[in-house]
Image (cartoon, rainbow, N blue to C red; front, side, top):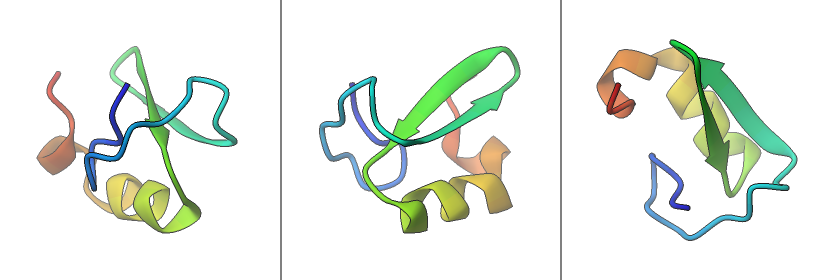
Length: 46
């Protein structure tokens, strides 16, 4: 799966994840997770 912020491939066991509108998003780093959490509508596809 891909990090919705940077597009990097990430493992579903990544420590960095957020749930939004019933979907779980995985991130490569805390920075990408923080960017998503600031504006999830911009970065989510759902």
